[in-house]
Length: 98
Image (cartoon, rainbow, N blue to C red; front, side, top):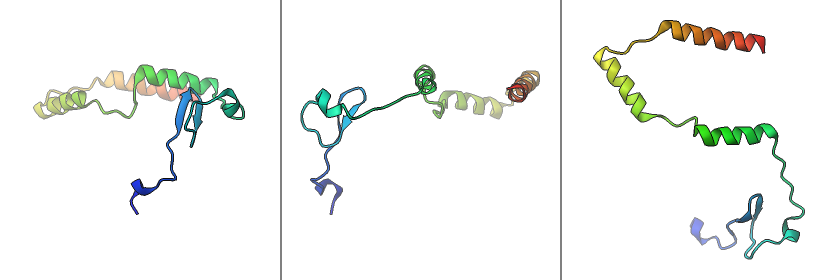
């Protein structure tokens, strides 16, 4: 059986933010969603806002990676060791003090 042959599956429909119902074919009414409750913490809201501003943290910046690889291949890549050490200490001290 092909997946496409399944006639009993119906795609969920979204009528408004937070209102998803499987198998609903018409517009959703207040009575249809009255029993559904979703709670989102303040931290989750803040993370969602940050993700919109920052973008996907797992995205690879291919241009930057290509530039760094080319600089390494030419022998022109230099590391600011003081900057790296300062950031490392800041992170470690921040974790110890929190």
